[in-house]
Length: 235
Image (cartoon, rainbow, N blue to C red; front, side):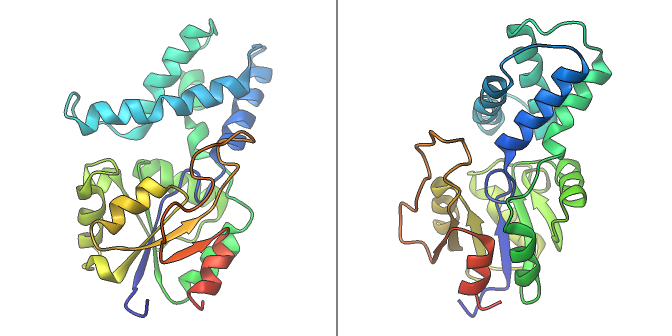
């Protein structure tokens, strides 16, 4: 563990509470535009289109597209499906930026601030750079650098998503730790030689979550908060 120089963070679900935030954004948008819908269901459906849209890019069926563009395509499908009409392109673009306005889990700013005193903090998210910058500024997330799918031109869990971003910091996998609330993300990182930290977020998908409720392997660190991670790494 003393070799670790940088922490790479999954963001959606691990650092920010996307579900509560997106439900709030959708509900506020609906009230402002006098639209009635099951906003909780739409938030879950929007997230449900996340992996399939990226898989089309990962598999080479589509050329590279940033996540904002994929989110917008998914949103347009859902608006049509739920017969939510009369919106301008500007309205829809603003709603799509809901993903720029996600709130952090309560432990994150304190824990990240402590970790930053000793270690390089980088995102390693499927979110695009402008999205992650907007989110960080709004939420007060103290990243040293913002990296991810866009800088690697590859979506996780493709190996290039991890390797190219570590190379940008001139670091070897053994000098890096992947921090995530998702076991498959950590498994992909560990296969490349990265150290791993599982931060449990059992309510990421709401009260009926059945995946990633707990660690499924013996990761290097297993905790339920960024404060716990800071404690484990003696920060």
